[in-house]
Image (cartoon, one colour):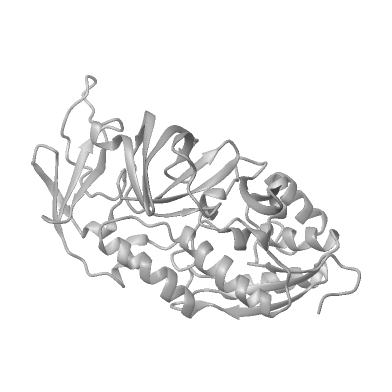
Length: 370
């Protein structure tokens, strides 16, 4: 039940981290009736050194106590396995490199979590993401735009580009308006127990663990040749699923010299192509090898924030999260796909990753690179 005099009930996804903790405090300060919800999304080897959900729950509960809000835990592990992890394995099996954070946001944090929050009487949900929502009133109705965060160095709109109008209408992102340094300062001034906690750097089911070792438990290894573009075999791979385009470390061919530079040293090797039919991994030398550069891409499985595609024309796009916006032209629009042409070559455009489109600070949506 919403407290009298409040701006409405908001259920905040509290992960035990600093960002979601400060989010809950800010919304309480703004006059909302705040309820914290801790999501447990993974149960396999949950007691391992790599997945710290027990400690995260203790941190979230401690913070809720300090800022004076109620908190409860909810288990979405079954939904996560069905909707996110199964897709993650399918994509890797097909030789692509998926981004599970994008799918987790669309299917768990802003679907299963939102549905659950509504049963608790919430009018809104909130998370510690760095992004903004803007309401636009026109023609007698309202629509909602997804915007980059004010702190562009922390902006997470790339991971949120599959959110739709109904989800954005119910979502608050208080951190979108402030800098990360200010979030840390607030946490310290409130003496939150997790004020000095490091930001998490991965999805829980992988965490900091050796990635290949983790995938090995779920996907069969299928070794095959590593070849140069000229067809020269320079090593053996452990299975195409374990490599991503542009990968430099962990190829296992460090001792192979290949082409020499003028000073007698050799350019680094990078994975550049996967041939599933022959189970071959192709590697090239040099960061700027033509096989690593693309001026066009095709994307499918599209999702547009407005519910309909933008018009063909000039925009900016990201083909990976930590990348500056690249000028591009959107074309070949169909119900489930589009093409992008870039004015400058893009490095290691990777099938399975998301191509996300922007018009200034407005995130328009995107699709999966094929």
